[in-house]
Length: 578
Image 1: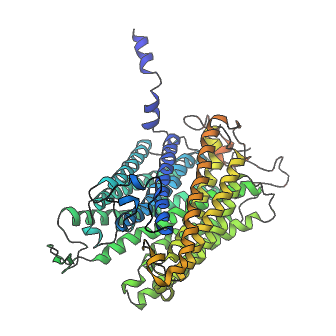
Image 2: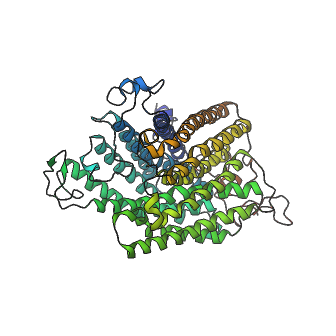
Image 3: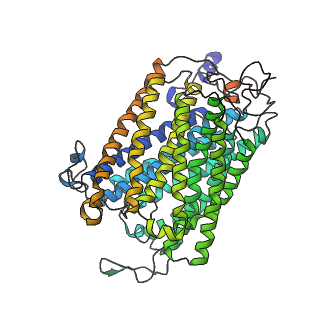
């Protein structure tokens, strides 16, 4: 009886417990990735609704218009208030619930311990708590659509005093942000400790894969920049529910009535606290993407990364400088010419390390025997797309030109080139590249090529016209600009093109989803190292890795990118090879 009882207790736990409450970093990484991609799909759907409104203002939305309700779209025709909700929640969901959790929580959780030769993260239970705080924050955010008055409608930046007096959905937004920030803080502490303390024998800092460096710098950005926004969110929450006035100025009149608050608050205080996080947040999006692209370019070109140390120093410097540029988002607040000059200067300086990393990746391709696999296509496309995003950002970093371009579609075009055909292309590259590691199966290359070329063309058709619209003065928040404003009516054909391109982009994402599910069941099986890579996640463990990652903790004997070494028996030499 005793033996039977012991056997029962030693039985494998049920599936839901092994997945939902697992402390294995690989399971948590996959949970992060799947949840983030679901949120990306939700955020993309909101964008498709916005694009219909911009392309065909005043027309009923087909298929779903009648499901939105009379308070959002009477007769299927979108109200401007609902358009504002879509804009605020699209930005929030795509950044805070989609790209960052996928780049850091998904790829970082799954790969960092494998790439440094660690059996797991330093704090497995903290890792699980981080995921559940993220999931809870996402649920609260989505639930705001069902709150009285609808979801948050004050933009993804939540500027007061408008956000202080907005509907109940804004309270949901703030509560969700507190949960999401808490998740990021727990995760960043875990990443830093893991990378510093759990590296395999022989794995010095200058032998770390560049992806690990990108995650380390990203974790410091999250750890140092998110607490000010968490404090700011709590203060705004107090303004809304406890009668304080941290951001409400004296003499504020709403609807013809004076606000019954003490006053004396500063709306600009929120902007400083928000952008002190939100500009480092841009590099939280970009750095993991650069790390992913670096891994794939080195592998696909069969060459070491050119200027590896220079790239490492650049991302460390970039992380430091990201804390000194936030007020270039605030040139129109009247900060004065001296402060404007300071933030213009730091903004120009911070562009240098990004150029260094991008140039190093381009030079790494020179003379390489490039394998044009699906991951390589997405990684190669990242380079010019991110380049366009960076170059178009320079006029926004100068006060004289920002005066005219601020709050126009030029800003939207710049930011989306960095994040959509930039960062998201890198994330797709990572999914195709490490899918065999996580599943033991290869994704379909033909479907991958269709997904890439369709996404590449349609994304450029969506975002490139935004520069034309912005230079013509089209405001980013008008829901019918091309119809109501006489000087913008000539731009309406661009909005129609962008609308059709957005819906076509959605079709190509269905190809990706089909590829994922088809490959899980029918994809060709692979060995431990199908890409013939050099880093530990490929060279030292199986695909997929077992619990604990390694049968024996590997010993690292060389750098991460020893491809095509003269005299070597093969064109790749793993880090742990004797």
